[in-house]
Image (cartoon, rainbow, N blue to C red; front, side):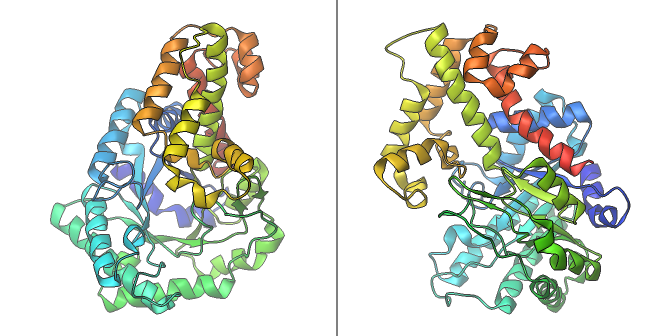
Length: 428
């Protein structure tokens, strides 16, 4: 991964050059999303950035059950089978800090966060987002900037020591935490507060000072991105698109930060023109996750309807019915995010832009239902009229022979449509 990391470290200099470019950060652990991403990168000869979050992957397993080393092995296995060269792969860790353990006292939560970032750095993850903004059990509700930056520097020291111990590639760092609610907003949207330029500049300065106090000036020189809020967000049924005129002052502040680009979170579902405008304005790292699994879910549900026509079997539970059963049995990942009446919650469980159904695909029952669906459809070519009926967004490309009309081909293509939008925005 050395070559790709070196190219990534120069992202700020490319921002200041003509022909601004960026990179999409793929935030998913779903095997089909990973496969589609790596096949897409291989076809284009492009670098690929794949990130895992602190809740998803950590030294204790996270909700995927994978440690950072296991996640790397998982991604690299897909790279090998997809023909994607490992020297173009960048692995990142997102929101690395005490968030999974914030119910604990700060000292204990930070010890666990340190063990986690040691595991990420030791496993060769070379893009590390330091996020220590969350209050722990014995903290005040809102942490001071100095506390956040001091904790971030502590974690950077752990990462630097891990790399020195293991002889790995020195990582680049992302700082800043002014981001949308992970997974999307909880309520209907009408506006989003854009980061104030002074706040972005202060984030950089307090982190610079905190790193320096720990003798980490060389590590801070490898900080390349600042997470800010450009005014984009999505909720269960709402999307706020990027409005460049509202971020003019924030964008101008980059002139005072030549070392950095901005990293934009929750860019899912943005129009293609809005994504391109973000990159043009210096938001060179575009995070995307739920949109990819939303597109995958669309294709899976479409295939479920197709299976009912191609291979009717009253004993086979439909995929939507199976997922409804799975989610109702374990409501922890959706209940507090989906308000409203029972009918409104039912619709959100399956169709919300927040796509919290993505947390359930790894469960044994969901995997069994998905496998039963794919076995019913098999490797046969699906008649185009059924594709037009149930997967209409893929019909034109099937007709043009750009997509193989098999179940696997259609699933990969549905995710690839989103990847193509990001490729167009980040490589104008």
